[in-house]
Length: 456
Image (cartoon, rainbow, N blue to C red; front, side):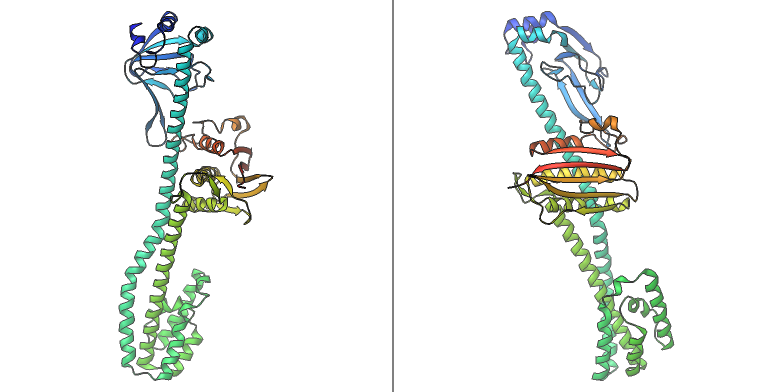
């Protein structure tokens, strides 16, 4: 009685109710490492923690991670009016622990005889559910953030590396262009000859260059190299000229009016100018790619928006999400199709939270699809709802577990590859948006369907 009177959760209830607990409970002790409740086992007792520390840990790919705990003064186990759910992982004593337990069979009598205790336990259960939900959502956001960060780092690496490489080459190319320009000036070409040289240089920006295959470009370089050799000019210029729209006919036309040292100087100047243009174009392309990625991140995270409900552009959110997952899509050679009409109504909600829904569903679809497979994302309007479908051609979800895929901590992925939180988070986020999620699955086709209220 003295220990119950000093218990943080029960000190305020009437003495008579603590007496009832003392008369109907049992003192249980656990050593360090004891499993109090096994994963999947229904809790059978109310556990009043008199002393000690109980923990639930889960491995989410980076070692064991604490997801819930009870210390001295807490109450755990099953409680009145709860659904009696089983823990997602073992409940383990991490200190020598003393519990005062009340069997679940005694709950009807306890509810009748101890109304203050019952009210305290219900409040504790609600607070525990709120804490667990908040922790759960925070953990899943961190997991999603990790995926986005990894994908973004991969996506940014390629254009950033290209920009650095091109900028380093640009300095040398500018020096080569300046040297060639001085040599060309020393050749004292006529105005007519310079006009012909300018016309050839203008072919640096030919529109058909990017459409050539690697084989076609190699053949062009060989042909131009032979032409240069025949005219006594360094054949190494063929690399720069081969990536332009310059043809053998253009070179013949230029050689008809310019010859000797002047032709050599002219072609060196043309090749250097073309290289500078090519490198500057590559830097622009890389910078544009980085800008687009940063814009996609801003759009995905809604970093400049307050987290309040507003009309949300579904198409933009899904497009930004697909951009974030681009590296994963390419690594598995998955074909992703997006079919969302331009006149699709906005949905009413918090953009960042809806983007987390798309991230989880599309990421799961990419995991499920085989290498070289496909993922289809589409959206339509049905009555006053916006309906989004995320379909993959993976092996499907067995019928016997389809009803459990939205349960917290349930996953079909291997250890460390899935926390079993993604679809539970999707379900809870959509409930907050007055939406819903469902799944239909057969071998070769799994369709997750999201329904959201359209913004009016």
